[in-house]
Image (cartoon, rainbow, N blue to C red; front, side, top):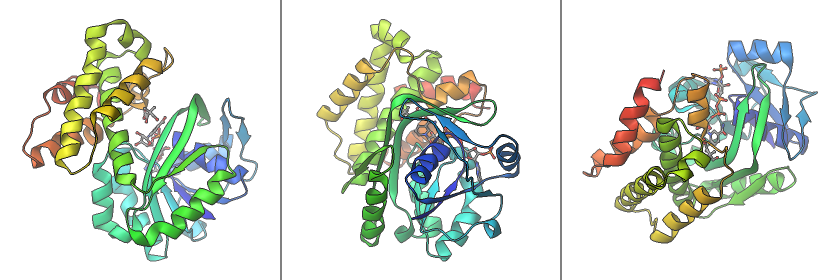
Length: 303
Ligand SMILES: NC(=O)C1=CN([C@@H]2O[C@H](COP(=O)(O)OP(=O)(O)OC[C@H]3O[C@@H](n4cnc5c(N)ncnc54)[C@H](OP(=O)(O)O)[C@@H]3O)[C@@H](O)[C@H]2O)C=CC1
Ligand SMILES: CC(C)(CO)C(=O)C(=O)O
C-alpha cells in the first residue's frame, strides 16, 4: 500500500516505521523544520518491540515531492489540524482516503465536512511514544495498538486491505465494525487520563496512591459516559469498570501524552480534548462540572 503520513511525529513516525519495515511504501509530508531535522539526523525508533532505522526515508515538505497515496494517515496535534486541510483536500481529490489518529473527537466531523464523509476512516492509537531532542521516536509502552474501521460503507475494502498489511507489521491491529463506539471509548479514556495527569502534574502511580484523586478519573468517565449516551453511543457501566481496571493496572510511571507535553513545556491539546467535550456537552444541553474544572486548571499551561 502507498501510505502518506502527515506529521512525522511520535505516532506518525512509529506506525510509519512499522509499515515500512513490513514492506509498504511510506512517505512523510512534513513542514520545513522537521524536514531539516530529518535531513540532518535521519529517523529511527527505539522500542521494546524492536528498533527500526529508516535507511530509506521518503519525506517532502510539499506534495510535489510525493507520489499519490492510497491512504493518508493524519498524525498531527489537534491544534495543527486546520493547517493540514489544504494538503488533505488535494490528496483526497487524487483518490486517497484519510485515517486520522488524533486524540479527541471534534476533528472527525470537521474533516467529514471539509473532505466528504466517504473520505474519512475512523482510527485511534493506543501507544505511548514521544520524540527525543534529535527528533527520534522513543516508544515506551508495551502497547502499540491501532484500531480502525469504516465510517462509511465505501471504506470497507481499504480497511480490509489495511488490516491485511498491518497483520505483517510489528503492531497490534484491530478492525472494528463499530469504530464510532471505539472512538468514543478512546475519547472518554483520554479525557479522564490526560485531564487528571496533566492537571495534577502526576503520573498514574502517584494518582493511585490518593484515592480521592484517583476518584477524579472515575468522575470524568461518568460525565463522559452521559455525554456519549446523549450522542447515541452505547457506553455502559461495564466500559467504565474496564477503564478503571486499566487505570489500576497501568505501570507506575505511565502518563498521558498531554502530561508529557506539559513536562516538556509544549503546547497542550486541552482545547481539542477537554474543550471539545465541553462544546459537545453544550450542544446537548448538559454540564460536565469535573471536566470543566480540569479544563480550567490545565488552561494556563496550554501554551
Ligand atoms: N504520543 C502518543 O503517545 C500518542 C498521541 N496520540 C495523539 O496523536 C496525535 C499526534 O500526537 P504526537 O504524534 O504525539 O504529536 P507530535 O507533536 O509528536 O507529532 C505531530 C507532528 O505533526 C507535525 N505537523 C503539524 N502540522 C503539520 C502539517 N501541516 N504538515 C505536516 N506535519 C505537521 C509536527 O511537525 P512540526 O515539527 O512541523 O511541528 C509534528 O512533528 C495527537 O492528537 C495525540 O493526542 C494518540 C495516542 C498516543
Ligand atoms: C492514553 C494514551 C497513552 C493511550 O495511547 C494516549 O492516547 C495519550 O496519552 O495520548
